[in-house]
Amino acid sequence: MSRIDIIDDFYSPLDKFKRTIRVYLPDSYDADSVKHYPVIYMTDGQNVFAHSRSARFDTWCVNRTLDALWSEGKLDREWIVCAIDHEIDRFSEYTPWAYPDAQIYEPRGWKFLNNLTEFFVPYMNAHYRTCTGPENTAFIGSSLGGLMALFCGRERPDVIGRIGAISPSVMWADYRCFEEWNSKLPNWQKIYMDMGSEEHITVNGIYMDYAGIVGDFYRHLLDIGYSAADVTFYVDPGGFHSEVCWARRFDRIATSLLNDAA
Image (tube, rainbow, N blue to C red; front, side, top):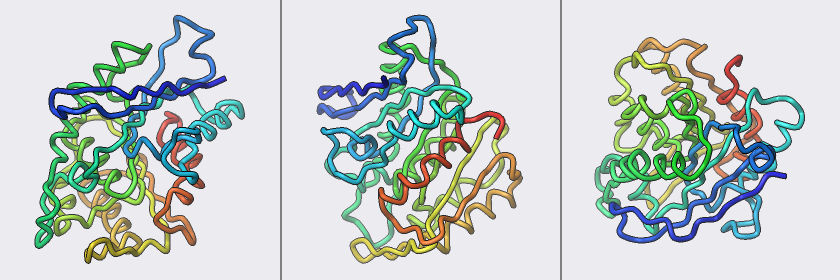
């Protein structure tokens, strides 16, 4: 059976505090001591797995979905998942740029990116049997975590080849993400983006119209040279901004983003 390792004392010099990371290992990992596996990195790690130590009852249930997809023959390969708990100030950690008139959020997205490339990825490669390289490395996040997936994938395409931007906050900081993605990268990348048709939320006075803007960003990527083969886009009918909906469509996310034939 698959299992989840919970590492409560992960420390990086950039953080200067200990945080928790949760590592999903597929069914064959312990049975086959030679096999190596590609890796998915996910934000909001405390909400990713169906597990007694998750932070909430309604999680993405990623472990159950990956187990089912593999047993049903719907995945090309088994994947390890490294789910990273966010720090106390989630908004700051998952924002690469300042938001005008919202000074309470100090953007620390660059620190997260450096943590990912300098500490999280090297740790996984040193402690688990991983396949390295961008084609074997996915980053999946939702909301501001989805914005971070796009940000990290844009900044480090040499590390991240598969980007899962789930309900991404591309409107953050006056649509700065549109400015940063101003040309098609020459690197191989596969991008999956989605949103729910009913995603309209207000957080601390900031209105976020996911249902209207995420589709605009998808069309922006096509305008700068990405093709439908590079980017998959999906609208979840009736979907809202919640782990319940993200869990409901994770099978679609996984088969679209992780399979090479798709």
